[in-house]
Image 1 (tube, one colour):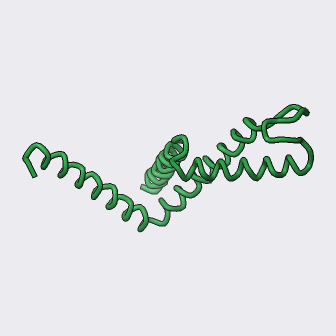
Image 2 (cartoon, rainbow, N blue to C red; image 1 turned 30 degrees about the vertical axis):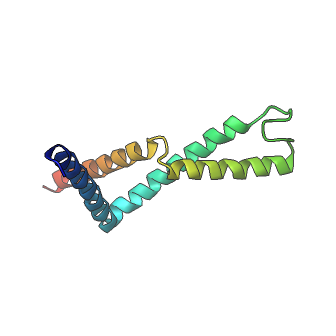
Image 3 (cartoon, rainbow, N blue to C red; image 1 turned 120 degrees about the horizontal axis):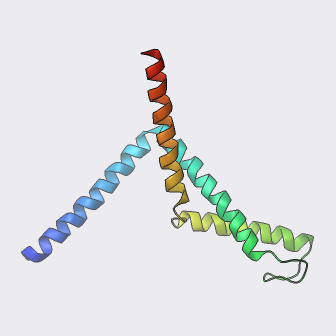
Length: 118
């Protein structure tokens, strides 16, 4: 391998190793895993509502066929699956921001509790 390729390859390997190490550290922290699941669930719910609105129609035949009880149930289930797949593919970034905010809130409440007791 030439020197011109060695440095980018090493940087790539170190970057991947760092992400794996962070993933392992996050997996070992059950509180962080719980926060991640809550943030992912919230993003999925948001995406479900968004996709449901995209496929809704006002009483006429919509983009997914006939409206009615069966059509509404089918459309709801389709929206749920779309939302889950979008979230699994990386979502829209809402989950990451929510998780950061939840961690900040926990740190603030922990430091506030220390200030009161100290």
